[in-house]
Image (cartoon, rainbow, N blue to C red; front, side, top):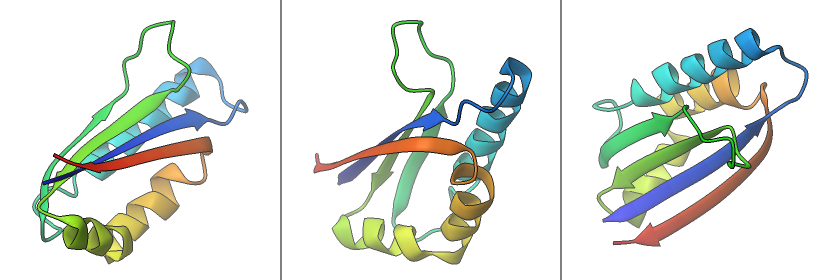
Length: 100
């Protein structure tokens, strides 16, 4: 199994209510991919963070193997969510992929 962890920081241009709406949209979009992409075993977006955090939200996803993760990255449903709900609003992205 492969874990795919992403941390994002949102752009600073948004009010607190806009930030909450953006995070909810990212969560809904990414978690909605479950069952649509071959090899995607589980996917969760964490939007509630402690004040000590340096990121705004986190993706925690699991894949059958590295090939499934690669397929996810180019799958049209994922690309649509990434381009429509994530990339326009995020300033930074950090990724860690590892085998379990």
